[in-house]
Image (cartoon, rainbow, N blue to C red; front, side, top):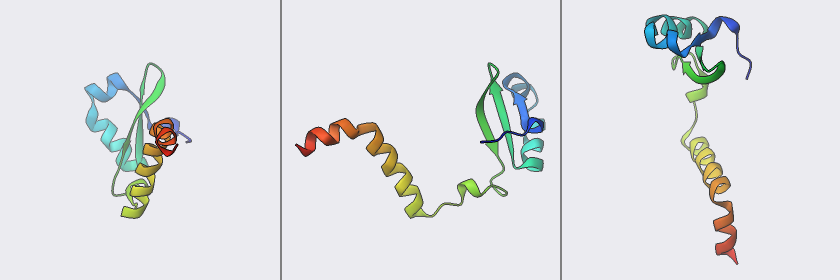
Length: 80
């Protein structure tokens, strides 16, 4: 993920001036909130972001992949 420097906000600033963070997200489509000098949170404008435009089948695939990855050893043991 490429982060534009103009969309970076510290967690402290986000806490103290959330309206500024929302304006950044509205203008750029997203605002990245840093905590301890690392990207930690992503605030996205739902109207402008294709991230949320997933079909139900796509969402199911994502969740299924997460479950399989997390519980793979258990599934392998059950398959024996």
